[in-house]
Length: 175
Image (cartoon, rainbow, N blue to C red; front, side, top):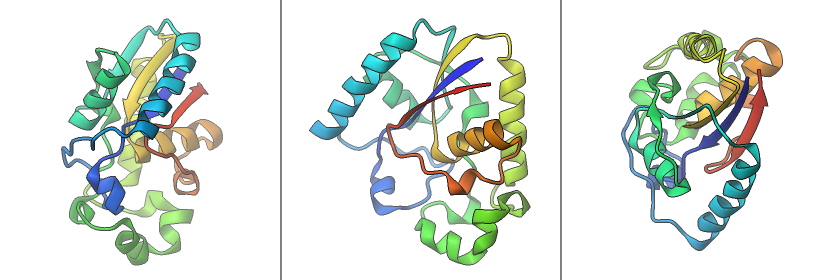
């Protein structure tokens, strides 16, 4: 299966480096620079299409991103962002300070509003559900995408926080 992942467009909380998690935050106003990134990504997507499925999480920032790309998408809650619990609406550095190296080296040991282990289970369920699909486009979230890349490369999500994914970044992974 080929899976092309696009992290949602920036939000005001992204700009403040606040964790969003399951908070249903809208995207920010689109700048000229972001518009150019969308156009560049659209050219890449044209080469990768047709897609058997175009999916987005249940959170509106992914739907808004998909619409700006010109796609109508199916909602797939398995793509939802990690639930950061009490850390939602808080600077990411506060959470990292709390968990220290465990956040970077062994996040599967961490339980926030959702355990990182459960995030991995959602990724596995997603891959099982769509295993017969040949080419998927999914609009999603940073933690989910990083965890999926780690799972693809290493067979687990423990390297997810050693990976950086920017807003509006487009990545294609083959499972």
